Image (tube, rainbow, N blue to C red; front, top):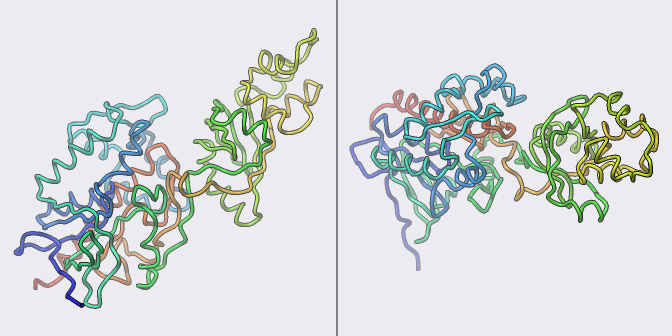
Length: 418
């Protein structure tokens, strides 16, 4: 038995132009807010049972909205995409994002690291306030609808609980996320849809993700989950200070994430990457050697490493992992200051905080409209940029959502009324 596929407009107001926002994360909701403020009838289509799931996950350890460092330094965090992201930060700067958050009744504070958080330290109060605002603006949110692409007549095609349906919209913003945290809705399923439509898309790869290192069973088993604090990691001449966590299969944490693009490039070229781990970056090698000198008076190596070198048990384990431990103070100091590590790969997407790759800059114009699909705009993690943790991911997602919405309004203004 055959039947027609149900069709509906993107909004509920037949006299208004309709905007479809596909994806209910930070970029999509920011786009929806801007479009609704301009007087459009806006519907957000979300494939999961509720919106903002990844935002809520990000807030489990404290919602790091943005960073307070100077914009000139802030923009360098986006690496090769900094010239693309810079104009977005001019439209929605870190200071402007903070004011937006406070406009929702969520006061903020700057942590000791310069990161900006809501006073509640949580995402749920902010999301509740934001959804209340969107409701007041007339934004309609539809859940459990998965975008499948376009019909032959240009309509949006979805699969939903009641089967397939099509949606007609005057303008569309895609904010479907990357491929990290697939159980929260971002699985990269849109990549082939856009490629089939002639859009250039770089492969999605894990970002802000741990690295794989073949530890001995003793080290990996005994110290799984143990933190390495106040360390420095060097790769190809670049050194990053921070923290990391030892896992059974390698290392993860901020110091590793910051080197992610370089490590990934080395793995693509050589199938391995060589790191040097400095367990006491606050001490010069000569000063450390002096501390290690002198008679041991029967003290064990573990005691020497703990009392004289100030190493935690997991750090001492890494010194041993690198091979026979030198007895000479100078050689031991060199080992502590440069523990060699060989990375053999990256952890899987289900452990990645974000993803790299996505819609290439060449595929969109300055308004983030797809050149191959006029009237369709792209925002958030779908775009081919990446950044370390620290507030940079959310900042660019919010900013690109705003840029896409304003681009959509600009494009609509240039279209004849129908």
